Length: 105
Image (cartoon, rainbow, N blue to C red; front, side):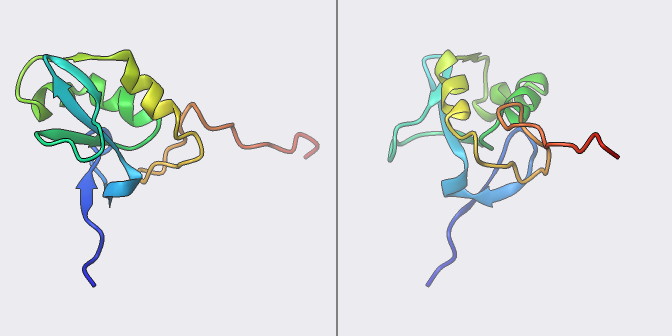
């Protein structure tokens, strides 16, 4: 049996299983979540605001889609849907609750 396909997150540049990432595509100059099985060029992103912000800051979307693009609000919603997933880069995402601390120490 073949191992599951891996893709690289354009935010943190770490490899993960394709099923763990959010697939994005370019639709007329707008980055949108890709429909399952949709053909064409795509980019993958870890589910979490940290990788989304890193990709946006580094202009990774324009490089991945080979031209100027605008981030559609649907991308933020697609990333926010995956609140219980931790990015392989190890950084906590804003959508995850902060770890509880014991202040009695």
